[in-house]
Amino acid sequence: MSKLAVSMNDFGGMLRQAREGRGITLRQIAASTKISVAALEALERNDVSKLPGGVFSRAFVRSYAAEIGLDPDQVLHEFLDRFDSPSAAIRAAGIGHEEAAFERRKKLAATVFLIALAVMLLLASGLVYYLLRNRPL
Image (cartoon, rainbow, N blue to C red; front, side):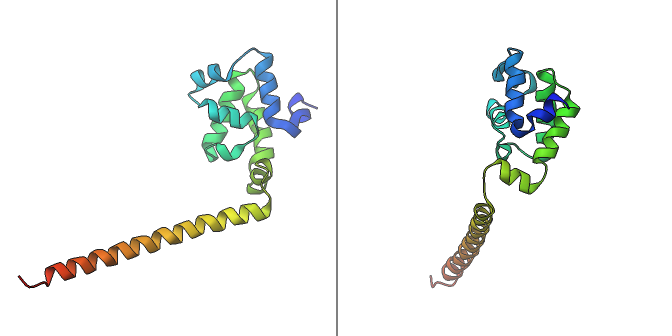
């Protein structure tokens, strides 16, 4: 069994241990990969919600692994096994299903509010234009 597979319970901790074992700082990795220290810290905390997602997260993981001397393909495979599904991302972030549903409803409500606000502003603008255009001189 590989060292990565044994450390699967704490993916980010495994990365941190490998980095620290080689005496590499997050700032050094950030400088060479152009990935922010905050994103690298999030990766080490298993907080994939702070990563950009999709191809970018995968590129971050591959670059990080290469910088600390691990096999980028193997590390990416472990990352995808752990975090590549929506339910895995929710579990990794420590968010329950109810909290995730609440967050979705909150985003929907904000979107509906912004659309209603835009419609009201358009109507108010039209009313002001109509009143100013038809006023007696």
